[in-house]
Image 1 (cartoon, rainbow, N blue to C red):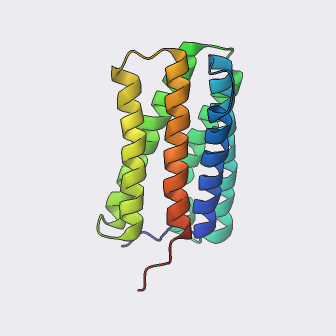
Image 2: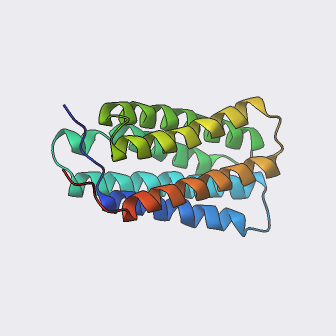
Length: 173
């Protein structure tokens, strides 16, 4: 059974969220834990709401519930990030957790879609971005300024990639 392709509106919404939060981090004067947690909270809650809404409105049946695990994780990450009180360790753990879970789930989705399909390759590339962020946060001794900066860079790269995927012409069946 083939996985249905994510609707372009859902991809565009996800790209807009990533780019907006990434730009906020890029042009923020402070790269402290409070700004990082605020950005992560906004990203998580926005991702959950818009991706969940797009899945329910634009997809039917099994395709509508395929994104539920990632939406729920994004919602929890957003809530935890907004409730954390300026804690550098909380930021590191929440970003690492998001990156591992999102990367693994997108890798699973890319495998289901097929690595030779356009949707499968797009999911695989985004999965690699997420997993590389997780490896970076787990292995490199980063200070909070670097952590927030790398999270912003991840959001920008992911947003640009997903935006290109949303704007690309559909493959002919």
